[in-house]
Image 1 (cartoon, rainbow, N blue to C red):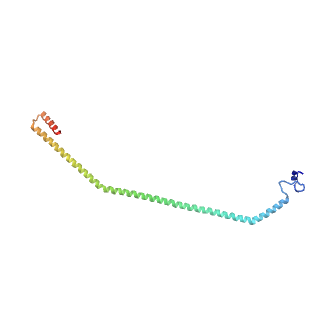
Image 2: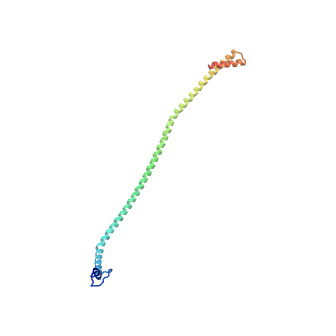
Image 3: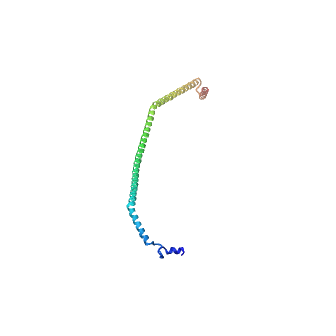
Length: 178
């Protein structure tokens, strides 16, 4: 027989076996082995696996709880940090406002201190202006008086006709200007 024929004949004395279904004695021995293995696994392995899974679940839940606690603490710290920043900003604003007020007060004090000096200088300048004005008026009066006296002398010495009077004033103006 060839090898194909041997495979087709099988072990059961020439009966053709079904390639999908195993032989009945294999089914019985496999079923008993499965039942024994199932009993042993359910008695010993399943509780151990269950305990490991429960421990892992508890550890994961503990980690989640710890993460929630850490997140809550972080949020609390952030709120505290934000409030401290707000306090610091308020304090900075207060200090800045106080510095501005102090600078304004210093400016006002300096203006008040220098104001009398400014008034003294202004009064001195007004007095100098008045004195210069008085000197200029005195000089002007002296010159006008001198001109008037000189013109009167010339008028008295000469006759009172119009042409002579005009010539006399022109001569006097030329003599005064030179």
